[in-house]
Image (cartoon, rainbow, N blue to C red; front, side, top):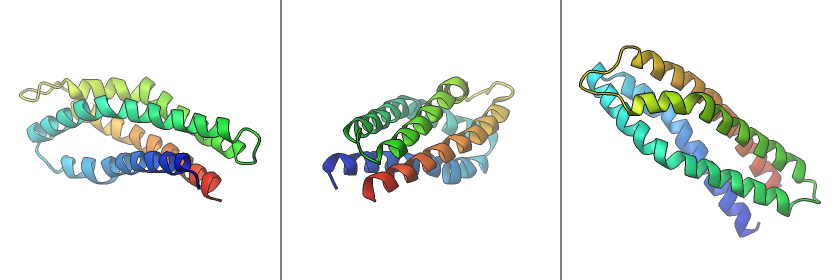
Length: 148
């Protein structure tokens, strides 16, 4: 296996793991907090992850594009393109629906959160699960294509 394959799989795998942990562990734990501390924790997380994740998503997509280019005349091209398309779908979902909600949560006045912020968080969490599913399927396809 080439170093680029290892970097691609590791980068995408770590991202999927991070997104899965947010959905499966972080958000359910935060929901157990009272409203004020929950809003404060979500606001902090939304700001910090809102800065880091776009770069990581872009890096993973660039790695998938490079892998696709390097496998242009091989049988692994089709799966890599499918994985890249799923990654793009996750990015489009993020930009069109999740980022606006995340921005509202990040800018919460935690002393007096705006009405509806809990509903926004539930909606974000539900849509985030769709994103996690897209990323997981993409990762499985990438691993199968690059390791097989």
